[in-house]
Length: 132
Image 1 (spheres, rainbow, N blue to C red):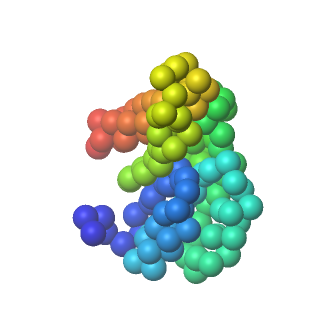
Image 2: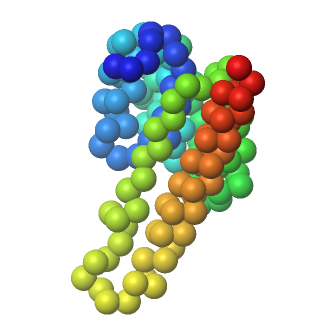
């Protein structure tokens, strides 16, 4: 891995890799923060990780609230060095239907939510770099 042990990670997770990825990182000694809609799943994963973890409920359908949650989680963790944002917008889209507007609710959540979170994380990381 590129990172040194014990650096902070924040994972905004979805679907299949959300169970395995944090465990692999924690096994290497990383402090892991996780945010997702399914808080019960995060609690289950947290119980299986022996290192320090942070969890938060986050729903990208409300980008402003998701950004606030992200900022709170970053503060609780004392910062972050890497963020991984899971984005599976295509799974909720019907590609057989010619009316793309039927996928608009999924696209609104995943594209706008992703952009809001990515922009917030990049601003945090950029400010940290500029401060050093």
